[in-house]
Length: 314
Image (cartoon, rainbow, N blue to C red; front, side, top):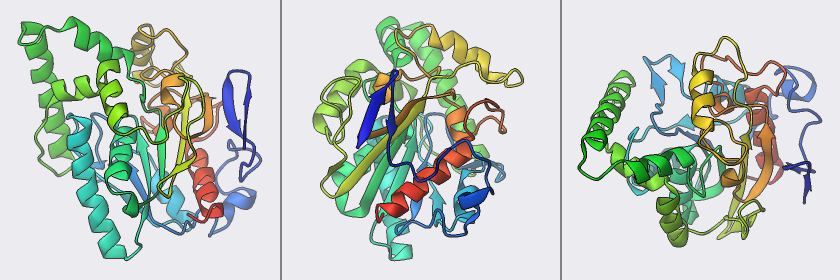
């Protein structure tokens, strides 16, 4: 059961009193606090990676935090720039491998940004492998930045070609730095994340979507539980150089947002909260832990959610 209040949706059955509590305090110190029935699989967003140089995690410190609470955690890697279906197929192969190696039968998928759409795809085509889907700052109704690029870059034009070259090159570099080599298609990625692209995707895979833009979606379908959360902070740290970029991008949006995704566009399944004091990168504890010191600790939010999954038998 959830309540709608002051522009945000917050669950009434939080497993801890305050998600902002520091890791290691009180109940968070219990070794089995995050010990879910099924493994947790973390799925990165656009321009993301599993781990760069083997030391810089996309989900900064989240996996180790969850493991300290007893969770079995896996991080995945898909093409940095490509369509949701292509990324989703790459993710599905890894999910099948994890399930086979662990004998777990199912996994709990957690995806950030574009990764949240990838996990929706996997749950739609192989619901038998998925216990739950959680999306974080994912543009379920499309992202204004992608729509702007889609509308203003002419097919085959110089600007589109330049963007494609730069983004594909960035994706290739990020892929190599994370120990992989995968094809990149930034134009397909932009089309997937635009409002038009998401309308088509949602028509094919509607499970978990709210009936109204800013409402709650179904909490369960085909035996899969659905959750989401997001933030509306943008300039959250004076020492984080990415905040200014997110601040500029946020001007394209007509609703409160995290610098990349609108608050209502992030709604999917049971909306845990949609106005955390985090921007798009804070949501996964990037960069290097430069987060809003007056807001919740992202790692605590993840660990609290793992407890929620555990309590739900997932």
